[in-house]
Image (cartoon, rainbow, N blue to C red; front, side):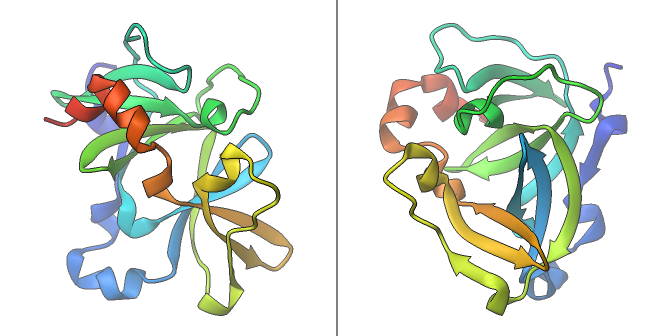
Length: 175
């Protein structure tokens, strides 16, 4: 399949700009290893099935390479590697969540997109700081829905300033 349009879900199809106020508290959940993670819906541009990835030399191990999405070259990050989880082969549920990261289109490779959920303010806790691990910086908040614990990612922390400076392909993405 060379035409990615058949393999995408544009979040804008479901939520328009007028709905931005009603998107408050909505999160796109996805599986990452044994974790359930989430991004605010307003931060998600689209979701695509995993297209072919072109590797780029001298990138950190969590940057898998770049993809061509309708003529735009977009770097993709393997979220399992970013979270120091064990690699596993990609399958038909593996997706790329396209976000705007530091004013650049960026893809996040996740195991499986789950659903859009509403998490009420009273069910959100600040980021749990269990030690000073690198992974804890990626978590903005923790949401609770019944027994389910959802790690809400902090997009501003996925790449730090030195990573952006060191890897020009990340800076040039989406241009």
